[in-house]
Amino acid sequence: MGIFSRLRTVIAANVNALINKAEKPEKMLNQILIDMSEQLIESKKAVAMAIADEKKLERETNSQKAQSDEWQRKAALAVQAGQDDLAKEALLRKQEYDNYYADYSKQWEAQKASVERLKNSLRELQAKIEEAQRKKNLLIARAKRAEAEQKIQDTMSGMDGNKDSFDTFNRMSQKVDELEARAEASKELSGFNADTDLEKKFAELEKTDTNADKLLADFKANMNALPDNSNSSSN
Image 1 (cartoon, rainbow, N blue to C red):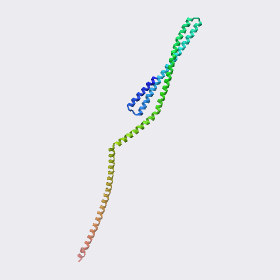
Image 2 (cartoon, rainbow, N blue to C red):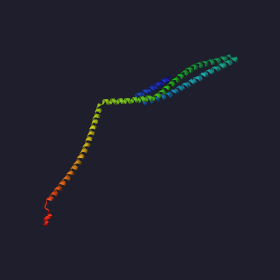
Image 3 (cartoon, one colour):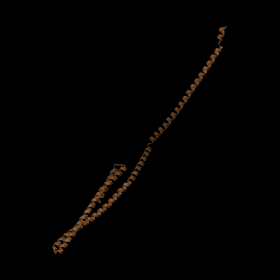
């Protein structure tokens, strides 16, 4: 079980390092899942080695049992041949292999139990990583939403605390209204001046025409008042 303790330690260390760097949640979550996946691969390799050791112990146990059975067969053969001394030697060898078999059997059973625990832990770890992968997008969405809300709150707080900016904005708004009013007034005055100039032109024209009529009338009156030169020359 030590391998999974080390795995948790490594993952926790990586997570703490990322948090201390104040990385963005999306980057942190992706990196954490990468670390988890890499550690899962290493854990699978370690479990595979434990399984291989268990299989090796199984082979050794079966081998010791086979050797014990073989020396028992030889002891029986020696008894049948009337060679009790040889049978005793065979039985001593059998006893030796029986002891080996008992020791290997205990180790094999312990290793099998350990492998089962490792397999269960590995399946649990893999399930948690898969669950984390499924939740990652939800967590990222929640983090982005929280970040956006925080930015809005910070902006609102900054605006509430900076009344000078609002006062300046209001003054500028009033200034623009004033400039627009002046422009409209200038436009109206320009039109008024144009109309006045036009009226003056017509007034001058009427005045000119009236003077000409008067001059013509005076001229004609003076002509009528003069003596008739043609009559004088004939007399």
